[in-house]
Image (cartoon, rainbow, N blue to C red):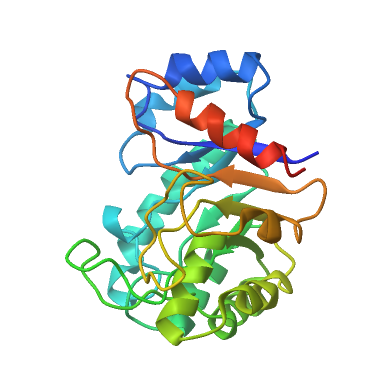
Length: 255
């Protein structure tokens, strides 16, 4: 049976928190993947109060964390130290990292290696960054070759984001499902799953499962039976997570 994860941010203690407790107690999902927003350490005690397993996601470029650029190193270390506090306190088995924007993949590998973080997973990214939102043009870790550089240097694992891989395939004019099969050879420790607007779309929209162009049955047929999957679909309401319940039901009907 799949292990399904709910994606939340560390600042989501004002809403979604009570819903997360309710849905976990109802057996809807198995763990929380918590994105650590910088300077949110004051929320950690509230997350520690939950008897729920956690995976941790480090901040990405939108929050000033960019492993691909040397000039960002000092700030990256500061943010990683906060991430580590969350991961230690919440007893997370994994910390997921993005490779950064622009810069170069060798710098990403150097900085992640320096963290000496045995729980590290590198996540694959779209080829192009979202225009006017990410402050750069190209994502690092968008190709299998770049991911291999980081995995070999940092001795880390791999978080396989299906939507990101399809966006990268679209940018590079690659056959999408064959490209997914090639990524799967990197032996993912975790998966991120959303639907996509189009197989030609270069930018991830985080659509609800079954509402887009993705042949989800075909995709998850390649997952291990016990795959750990975070559903990164959009949240349509601040009052409830009913849409997340629907997404979990959609996945499980193929399990």
